[in-house]
Image (cartoon, rainbow, N blue to C red):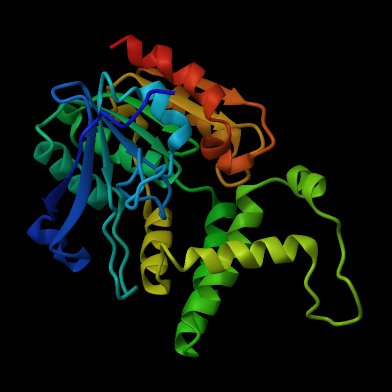
Length: 311
């Protein structure tokens, strides 16, 4: 992997358009890599932030496995803090988020940029390419559809109801942890759970904690460090507002999905690629489900690297 130490990193203050001030007046982006190099924006799920390559306190960022492929010795890497309604009352559309991403690209020196987006970030990337083709040179869309799958929307709606009830009861953090645990069961696969955990609960206590349940509780409690209950409501609902017209996207687009993804099934990825004027498709067979973009970086890099070199 490319050594990140020599690559400078700067935070960029990004003004949010006045029409979107219900989601804040400004947000932050982070630019790292080779000064003057081609710009690559890297976007992840709703809990991702601007620290793609390296963390705020040092160490790795949230997508370390793919940084070597992007190569900050040759390219600039742009990360973004997604905007949200911190009261949880309204949800931005992915087009709203794309407008803010456009402002970040301009603040970073302008486009066109390559956008590498996974999950929610892939939806925002598609929305940007639809509305601002002048800012997009190429797209890599990982585990993201043209519109949400009904089954995935249903699961997220249940999560939001859990969080909303918990907020009303004054136990928002606890509700968020439960919702996150439920989400983890959809990000990963039954096969992975079977490999890692035994089934069943330990005794007659109806609230006994299973092996898998202990893992989900830990992941839920850790989520509190990166997400508030209200922010979760806003960004989770933003996923379910997503709608784009693939036929309107002219940028060359690499669509990558996972055969085991239950939130964005491979058929949705195939339909997206087929509807794009310049789309190509790869479906990876893997154990990781929707989390493939975080867990299978080596195979992702083998697909993305050559696509970037075509530019």
